[in-house]
Length: 340
Image 1 (cartoon, rainbow, N blue to C red):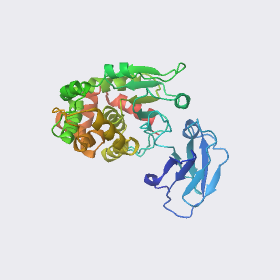
Image 2: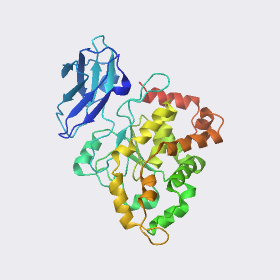
Image 3: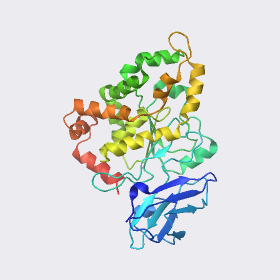
Image 4: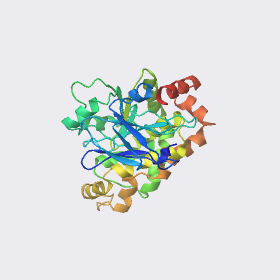
């Protein structure tokens, strides 16, 4: 009934919602429901009263409470339904905060909304952001930044935040000299696009224990997880790719999610800032040609991870069990918990 690739929720400039959908049978009258609790829909309980009906394949919905996240259930005239929510969350202090919900797994089930999140650093959240975050119900935060990054810009989620915090520093071995130079205000790489591909390959080669620990913590309870690093694109991008992969999402959909970072990070602003604050090894300003490939994400970066996995392991199942310590039963348990 619904073309799920064309069903989206976006926040408008006035902080209301724009809900879009596409029906394989045009002209259907769609009932739209709204709730601040996604489990209300996943549990199969009473839907209540629709907030509106539409045949236009999109609808503007007034946001009744700006500090609360809302979820939508769309129902066709034949009773078929789909659950939708915003992909990017409305947090000013961390622009790359996203929900991994809604993606389709290979068995036809879809990831539950409101369970698995990814973001950039959380040291600059406003008081309004913190209240919004606390309403999400996150129970576990995994921080992939290096210890010095965590100390300089601590994760801050408010005094009353109940989420457990796990420090899982990820430091790809091939980037060691790069990080040392970075602390001295120097960015010196001959080919930054190739450097980023090598960095991603090294995540597979040398950093798997940290990501295996993420899964161990995820299995320890009925967790609502947030993973993050500094900008939420490389270390976090790989972590999100692993979660989606284990849950059975296709590689193409994983790449598409990875590329969404380019929509949410202020890349041009960062290029301008870094070109003033950093130099190359000769003392000259770092050029945009060097900076842009390092600040954006490209398909070949995350594909380099998958290529390295295929090179090192006999199969995806072998990779899950050997590198992530996830046997068949644990993978099935995760899929039962996070897929609907």
